[in-house]
Length: 477
Image (cartoon, rainbow, N blue to C red; front, side):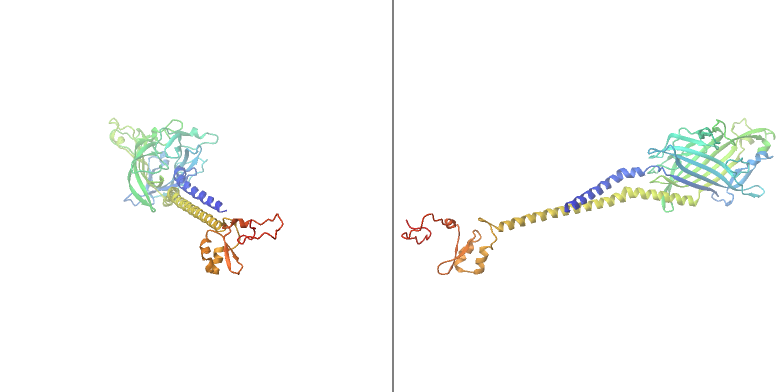
């Protein structure tokens, strides 16, 4: 049983030490990947720009119903941007495909006269009118390398319209080739340098630069800032290869409100929709989790022809289509910081605490095993020595006997005549005897070994033979 427990201690100790070495090498890399159960819902609302007091209507949008009116107009608005990102196929141990559905909803509007409206959204399969509460919607799909979070090109598409029943999603989606930037998650171990970041509105990678550290809900994050260059979104085709609806608009100059030298009220003027933005992304550096975001979006109509042949009133014309600062809601930020902290705790547990604890336990168990083994060997050696000493004490030249040691008996008697024999008793066993006078004598059997041989009389006793006085058992010759 003792051997069993010693073997168990050695096994457990070695197992703990092995696990302490293996976990950082094998388990932690398995944690440092895009999780296949990723499910991120983010909400951003329009907030006033610095120095602005427009809390209820901090954004500006183009009034789509004015297309059928006598003049184009804008509306003050409050907007909410919602996005949900989940993992879809194809996803495996090497790649993860994210599907991100995004909408921008109109919460409320106010026209030039001060009239406020809270628009509603029609059902998904119903016809949408110009005053519908849904401003934009799209579905982005991208496959990324699970270790680096960089797009790998397997899937990269943008769906701009709903797919009717029986229609393949690919038929209403556009491919986004050569996509390289991060978007929904950065890689692990983010550095204080520039990275590529993908902008869906303009379908291009932009450079975001490290701008500093910021503590959000007790979590240290890196802020990255990047500017989306002015882009003509009418040049970004839809699934049919045409300019997307609302990206090009041709109306009379008077409808646009353009007047001046070289412009007649009924001149048909074509405007394109342009977009630019300034992005602020806050990333937890160890896990690459995006925990907060701020984006200044500006989309507007202007003339694509900026040559001197175009009248100045037309060249200089701008009309906002969407202008607003979108900031992640506090609930979204709290959820993302919690997720990032959870990922950090997992990595720290697997990369530091678990190996440390298992290593300490393993060393203790192995030390205990070594101590018990050494103590057991010493105890076994002592036991063997004791057995050998006992055996030596109980063994004489004549063999093993059960009688008490004669030396001890003689010492107890204290007979002066046997003092010399006591000194010799450590070497020989002696037997006490009594002589004819009754005095005790001690005879060493090896002094006269022949006396140990029994007398055998083969001949009849002869009364005429006189025994020898020194050998009564043998007659004189």
